[in-house]
Image 1 (spheres, rainbow, N blue to C red):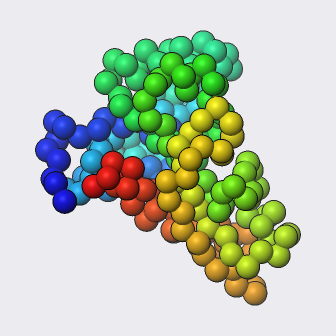
Image 2 (image 1 turned 60 degrees about the vertical axis):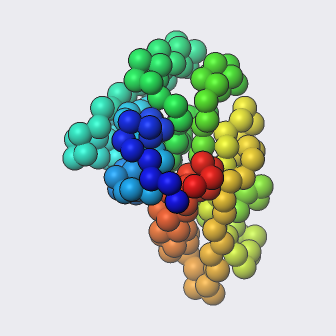
Length: 193
Ligand code: GRF
């Protein structure tokens, strides 16, 4: 495996809305030799997102937008991404849907992690719906982002077995633990390392 030097790494922005545990795992991964990326910017639509603390802890620039005017916000975002030479966006628990216009204008890779085995259970409340349907397995998916929700090409998936006593909370915890491992692996795969 070829080691990438700091200057050649892919400058990445991570978009979050909540706790940011995937952001934390991506930051830790980015500091390893095998990582093709550096995390250079954190974007949030939510000023109270707990994950913003990782910007302080790891000294990564962060910006918050309320997305009230989506069009205007996305235009500002495009400028900031360009200014920071961002080459890839990782969505990690980001609760806003980026417009087709934004995706087309950014032109570079945007990837997302979703807590289900796509194409099953797109959208919200995945664990609840999985349990209601008495599925035997669930899991998580890292995929490329296109203009349709949770529908871009799958990069990697990880399956988890649902136990008899599974609850929404226990399934969320089980899947999230796998997400933290899957996101870095999918990035390595995406760049063919
Ligand atoms: C994860 O389950 C992710 O798949 C989903 O939202 C959750 C975010 O968790 N889109 P965190 O903010 O990374 O802790």
